[in-house]
Image (cartoon, rainbow, N blue to C red; front, top):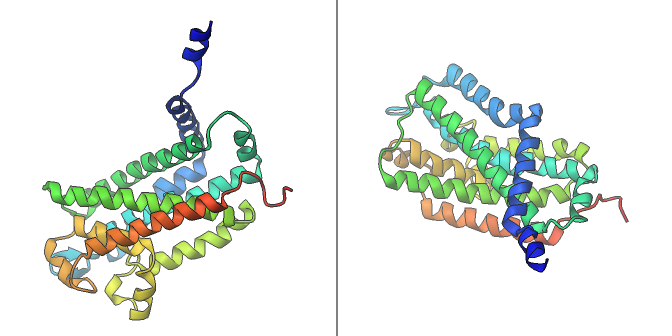
Length: 273
C-alpha cells in the first residue's frame, strides 16, 4: 500500500509539465495573444520592410535586414516582458493565482512552466520572423557555429531577462486594466531608442546612453551581430559588436529581475487583505 502511494505521488517534473501544458493551451486559445505575439511583429516587419526595406544604411545592408534583427529582439521583449506581465496580472485579478497557490503545485513549478512557455513561444515567433527575413529581404543566415552560439546565448539571456522582469512588473501593476497604459509606453520608448524602429546611430546621443542601460539595446545589437555582415560592426556606435558588454548587461538584468520578482511577487490582488 505504501509503495503504491509513493509511486503515484506526482513529482516536481510531472507537475511542471502538467502546468506547462495548461499554459500552452491557454495561450493558443487566446486569439488576442496569438495576434500580438505572432502576427503583429510579422505585420510590422512586412510594413516597414515594404516601405523602407530597399534603403541601404551601409554597403550591402538594407534597412529591412537591419530591422529584422531589431524585430527579433523586440519580439523576445514583448513575449517575456509585456505579454507575461499582463497575463500574470490578469490571473491575479481573477484570483487564478490565489487558487493555484492553494494547491499542492510548488511555486517553482508554476514559474518554471511560465518560463518554458515563454521560451517555446519565443522560439516559434523568432523562427517565423527569420523565415520572413530570408524569403522576403534576402537575409543571409550564418553558416558557422560561432554565430549560432552567439544567437543562442543572446536569445537565452534576453529571454531570461525579459521573463524575470515581466514577473516583477506584474506585481507593480495595481490591476490588469492599468497594465497596458503602464507597460506599452515603456516598451515603445525602448523600441524607438534601442535600434528597433530607427537605426541606432541616428538616435540622439543622450538617448543612446539611456538605451544602453536597458536590455533591448543589447538584445538588438547582439542579433545584428548574428544576421548582418561582420564588417557592419564598424558602423555601430562604438565600432564593434560589444558582445562581452552585452552579455554582462543582460546577465545583470536577469539578476535584477530575479531579485525583484522574488521579493515583490504576490499571489493575491492588491486590494486583498
